[in-house]
Length: 601
Ligand code: NOJ
Image (cartoon, rainbow, N blue to C red; front, side, top):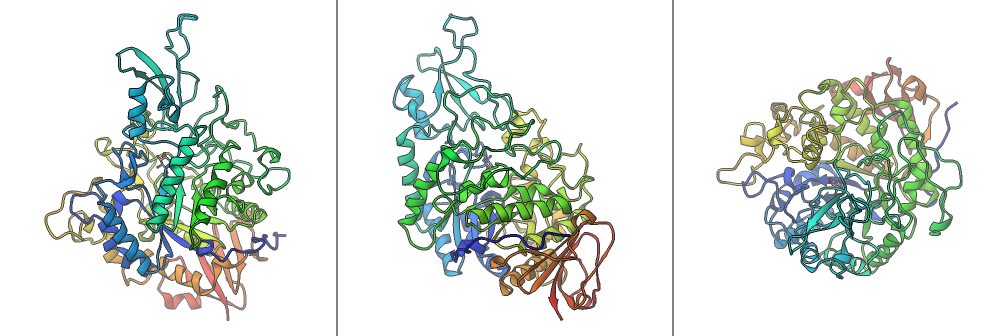
């Protein structure tokens, strides 16, 4: 007998973000406004009408700040400047003003775990030498001796590995040319970790928040929100570090015995799950991070308009994630359990129930996300032999997806995500059904993970390919906001992008773009974002069927192997299948790999 209902938040916040559909813009690849082959803020401005028509409530922009681009801008050299690649502060202001005029909120990315090695602080730290206050802004340590007692400091201070591959420590050459101290970088060597034990770092990041709040930003997506605080003493750790901690190997248990987390008494919180594969790491999900978010919550509260923060925190289980969205911390956290469930009814149902319950226990609405700039696109993942796998990039030598199957399932999964209460995050291009570029040549790759793992990890370039706006134009119209001759897009686009270009889907019945528009409109008209999930009697995840009621609608998603009947007294209002709308009203079966929205007759 299915669980009849899943608890909703005690009281759903009425703030705009509580049920918002947020569209993620990866600025390098969204739209090019100046013809240099690289997306930019003018390109975003030019395409705002498209986003308004799509029906989203907000945009989140990945970093556009001054940066040497060692990690696509997640290596920030100046938190208060726009990189010339993307435009100017005036371009940002113009884009934000126009977004607001169109009723779209604007979320910017905050990268507080590390800076770029070109940040003035890091440059000052290098110049100032060991023991200086400048070095105290980062995590510098003397090395361990290779020859005991020699003081040679040749070994890294501990055994931590970078999430991008290789060691997490690099050794400096001091200004006098002698071998020097080591500094910690959980990511690339060019992304030194900040020292959050230092009050100056807190002060600076509060000031950065205020800088963007003063300019009118509606919120922040907080990068590596689980990583800022490191365990005292920086102890060795033998686990494998990954951006997606704990996702390889068998299906993870996502339930933890014990009480749900409550107010902000970090000391008495339940212990996180200790998986044999990934014991708790000394650099992720330390209890100390929460004081930082309580502090930032107070900064945001100084401003009107329901400003918000959304945590990028790859932590498990759901109860552990819920701690980031307690009433006095962040407003939202990305629900990666849902993303990682893959195309599998039991895993998806479990992720939905567990996420809703955990979020409800702290009075926060859930979020739903299927793709982003760090993951293989869901239209490609779901076309693999095992649609629950989570590859770290796909290359020409790897299993290639069944594109049509993947797209059918992706459309179906999106209809599930958009029908769930809370807020949904879309990644640019998924509304066009874009696949991952799975055959990018090595020469085109830019992701540092590819280089730091010597190609063992293909990396994330395949989901970051510039969008196709117009099939017949050079670069599929990526630079079409520009009048002159445009450069090639910064990453090559696959031929398969042509027929998926926005101009080919606009107004085309059954296209993925029109499906997204219809689903977002349905979600809004039926207030699904503010509703609750009640599993119906058709719900049978063990035979591949998800079925739930939300408001007056019933959602049936068929992840099984045989078609399922449409419940009596209901008709199909929207289907993820490709058929024309006229057929939908007559549909009495939900085909395999399809989701339908039903309304009473
Ligand atoms: C998470 C971001 O989403 C990813 O793109 C980046 O490489 C790392 N954090 C490091 O900032």
